[in-house]
Picture 1 (cartoon, one colour):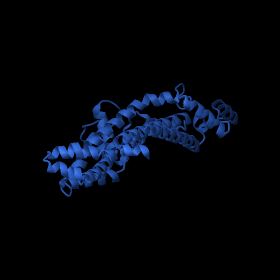
Picture 2 (cartoon, rainbow, N blue to C red):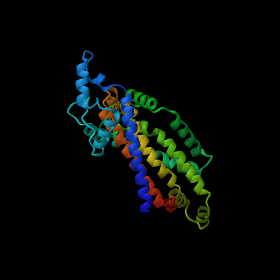
Picture 3 (tube, one colour):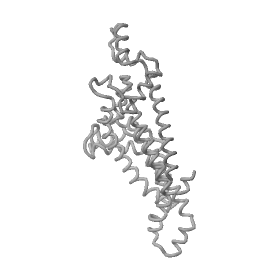
Length: 306
């Protein structure tokens, strides 16, 4: 087991290093940051002086070496758009809002998808199964930004049930959380349904029913537990999608999280903040995958030897 965990940890570190290369290169492909920091009337001397101050006059491999050495210590430098604030400090200030929204979206997704997925498998071909197919179709076909605008127009503008933007109590989270988690409802529900259908046809289920065990115990205790391995593996992907998907949702609802911070930083070509946001997102995604891999190995001991 220790060997398995060590191998997965090394793979996670390798993935994080590759991500640092990608974000470093992509940030610089967005354009020259000096154009966003200096006014139009700036002289060539102004460009050279500011370039030297921020270290942009160094070769790219030197800049990357400096970036990587600092990133290991959690230092991504000072923000260019927000003077006086460190890039990591800005991300950490906004991260709780994003985690709050992502957590609420995940909760809504599971509460909706789990019972519908189980019932659609148990009553295959019935009303619940048809409902599940409709929800899955809508969940995987409706764009998130469009769904957010429609929900805002109906439930906030016309009905006045929820606020249109900003961060506050549960009322402020409902619409953006549904927008963020709607696609995951369809994905989780279909995965639970397929896993349950496979388990329901197994021999131990037939034996449990022959012994006279209550049907709700067979379905919700024994079948669901054995069908949970595949959805649990998918949770790692869900965590990454919810974090990265928050960029669009937070922009639509003006939710003050890291997603909105990333949009503002990209517009200002603030390399420091963009790199910090992406690395934090990647770290959360990779650590979640590592945790799920370890839990997966405990649920199915055969995984340890693969």
